[in-house]
Length: 287
Length: 269
Image (tube, rainbow over all chains, first blue to last red):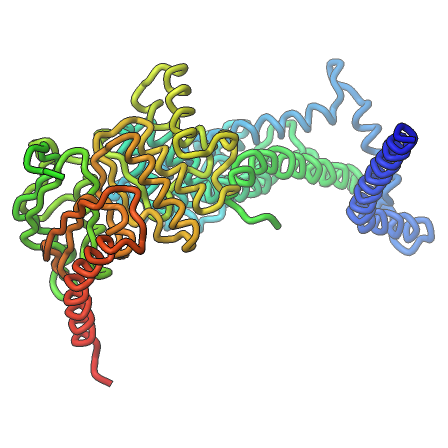
């Protein structure tokens, strides 16, 4: 009797677990569906319009053509390496180097400005005046100073990301609750510990905003700088060079790859940093 | 209790603190002279805005006196240091550190060996009744639990003085009462010199060995009342009520004075 009852309960639990799992899958599927729906509709519409001859496929290649072109580009090789891969990697390395330099120096300068009144007063006017200059305007000057090539592109990326990171870091440091600093001082904290263990994490909310903005600016700067200053490789260069052959499909492959890489860096990398820091620490409200 | 034999822990001599200049100049503390004995629980009460928190900040070393001196063990205070622990009204916990991390922080700074530090931190977690919450982040805790962490954090690196700035001021009435009992238990176990700022006379009479009443701004000592009722005290005890009335009458004069001054400053309608 008793065992029968417990068996029934176990059965019940199993069913409930299965239902819960199903629900979870269903919720996931709904999310994927709503995420993919707008993209799918655009792709299908464009494909249809191109097949029906409403739009000129030479000027506006259908998605299927863009996909095929990307395969062709990926399979064409130079020295045993896929052309497309070289373009992607060149851009990737430039942005990683440029953005990392900007992040490191921006956080350092921003923290100094946030903690030291004199440094703040000295640097703030310069930053306020330089910040509004579109990074693009620097490129011709840099071309003369550093020539065509990686150096100019990396410096452009660096400049484009730097100010947003400095500004937001210094703002973040200045808005840390003074009592958090006092508490560490009472414990006998030295400057280095204060910087690493209190100021950096305390400024994190604002700093992540700065880094995300900076990363966005970096992408724009990268593509623009590659168009003007890339010797032979990079997605920006690929898009720009394709204009000589009227290869709109190649341009779209470039746009598509820029979009995907940007998405991965922004949501994948910055998003995870945000999740394991400020969201976990309850420093932001859940959306 | 006889304080005559006890050692003086904190002493102020003609202490004065002025904020701002010109029209916005405010004399927060003027000619303040007091003495706090070692291992006693001293509560400072005064009308709100009278400068009692300012006084505590000066003792902590967060701010410097305009003139006069504060001596801790006969040496002038030159800045914040690990010989004084501070408990803030708004807890001031590090949101990026767990309960254990917050309490360990002071010990890490003091370069206490890892194993020893952990053991010590855990013993303070036990003292404040937070076993099982070591790995919780502060934002998941209730106000009362946060302040338990605040107290454990300030005690963990073993300062000789604990400074408490309205530590239960932002808690609800029930939690406040519980925390007061808990603080009494913790104090009896540790016997630190505690300087506790509050505007609640009920709280002051319940906790203190000695209550120091501050005047309305600028803060001076209005009166000192020794409370030698044995602990644990009850809020209905006759002795308790008598002491409470005494403090209250001293404070009431000052509150009225502070209110009149505020009113004079406001433009007439």
